Length: 192
Image 1 (spheres, rainbow, N blue to C red):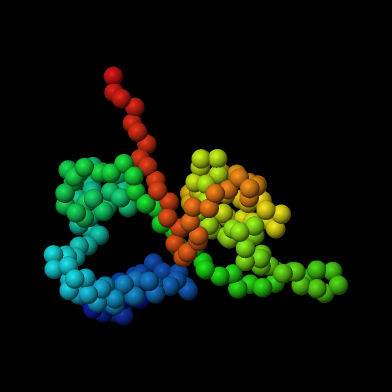
Image 2: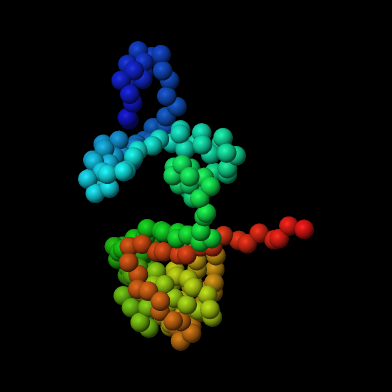
């Protein structure tokens, strides 16, 4: 666990109690503690006006200006320019797995045969997580059947169609390690 020197001493003296569960991992925090200064220095070489900030400053700015909690709001607070005109859209990005290395299903069929877990690489020209258009709606392939019917969803989990025929799909973008979806802010009704 990453602690400052004072807290580390207090912990070993028994004057600091930590509410931890056995097996809890802090690898991500340790990684960021180690790497953030390296990243900062590299960015500073390319962009001399880069500055660092801390979460407590962002939170204080958000609370002081009575803004709701959210990633986009936090980004706005970090800029220090709360009066900036915000766009009505943004990009939501989700990291996905690149491979499914589980070759067989865990349970064995009658007769001791193992059932293959992997679907074919391409089904009717489409892969898992390809970005497609179906009846003027954009989404991603989250499930495939060898018959050519696909489970289509948005990144928030909203179902577009549970069994869309491949003939009605238009490929927009082949999959890669990141799925990108444009999201729009809902228009507020005019005040009377």
